[in-house]
Image (cartoon, rainbow, N blue to C red):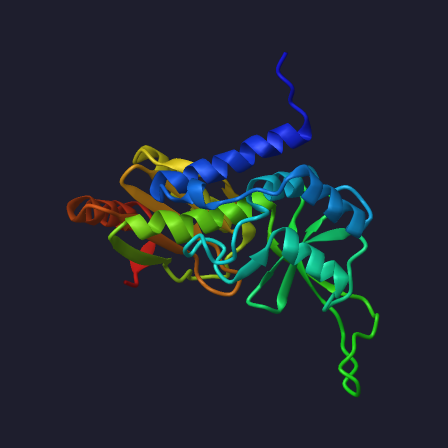
Length: 264
């Protein structure tokens, strides 16, 4: 009988990320090192509660990987068993009671995985706290939450596409949605995203798993299409391809089927 516990499901999803990266960087799967059960138990004892299934699956696959050993993937991100233990031993920011430390980006940007789900997934977030100007210490007042990704898997697949996949594609162009004649509303944003998805699928692209928020990524063997939604600017579409003739064809089709201007 096949088991399908939340942990097993998350482990399979994490294996999918690894397989995706290894498809374009064969050394990837040979470089990662996972944490063992003792490592994870030690972390759970330090934080005082069980890890979420996706957090545990991430550590079990990558928790002992050497920093900056995966090329551009998670570059300048301090993660894993030792990083987690260091954080809880000497927290540089207030420890959230409702989220667990995930990693630190660029030495001073701590990210956390929320305990509670939102829309079926636990967001990856950053927090900011008021600081007393006289002492530079945190005041204990209400924090602000900044959602970095709707889920851990979303963040990892974004990294996989942007840092690993596109490194294998020689040609790149950026398009921007044409400036609207009137204020853009939610319906027009959804319509543009829907048209982008329709064009990508007609061209034989498949949507990258979990990347369907402000960013929507599509991939196929020889090319990639990406939509980046912006709150204060026009949406952008990026076209990547290996072959020059196919690249030119894709750019022409994007230009013909979507209301965009080419920027690069």
